[in-house]
Length: 113
Image (spheres, one colour):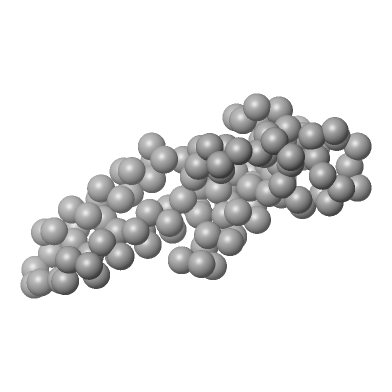
């Protein structure tokens, strides 16, 4: 149990003030856009034909996989660094998103993909 006022009773639970924008920023959209662009160009230039709906689903899965990787990396690096182990993820407003929530979000995306 933590004494931080921005956290709920459970250590792994999401804080009360975490917004969807915090979780979206955790996906690292700038890096993710490069991965999605590369995947889309690869599908476009590949020999043979692919159904357009299958191509969109493939690019969407690439995007979710890249986002899951970014979120998991934020969570695990915050857990493994001694200086960051007792605080929220440094890039985000203090208390907005806890490191355990970031890791859980990344793992959930990876499994759902």
